[in-house]
Length: 180
Ligand SMILES: [Fe+2]
Image (cartoon, rainbow, N blue to C red; front, side, top):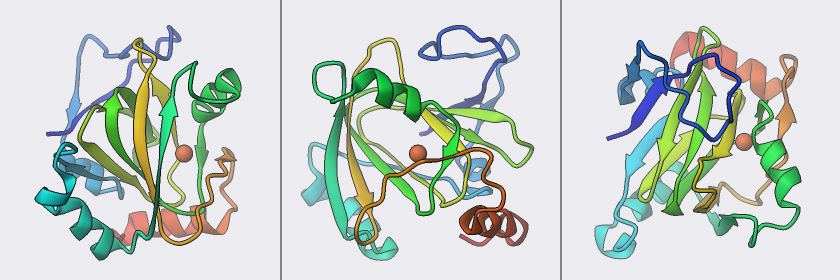
């Protein structure tokens, strides 16, 4: 089951959980209501399980690679960590399946509040094109993820504000119609 909650407003270390005292957890259906999709996969038996193949087929994901985020493995580590945590959007979906380690995706809900989604081995998430979001490692400082994409990958973040961007406008429109 997905583990997600409304973040506190503290400016303590981004790698901390940021759970407020009056903790409000968020359900899968709620994430889905603004386009964030989540699956739990058996990463030790991806082929046997067949779920990844089904998701790939259903959603047209044709590209995949892996990224290892740690001081030792990621070139320009400090710079990348900073850019991952700068609020941004993309013109395409952001799709990640966690293979090892842990981290947090933060997404803006419809009321522009931060929801933190805890990601660990087997968690797969799709963020729709145009949603404002960010990513951080937690205090364990390591995650390894599969990145998927439809066609030739584009990883470029478009930092907020990007309200005039066509994909942002499209996303805002989808919020009204609820179609993803
Ligand atoms: Fe992103």
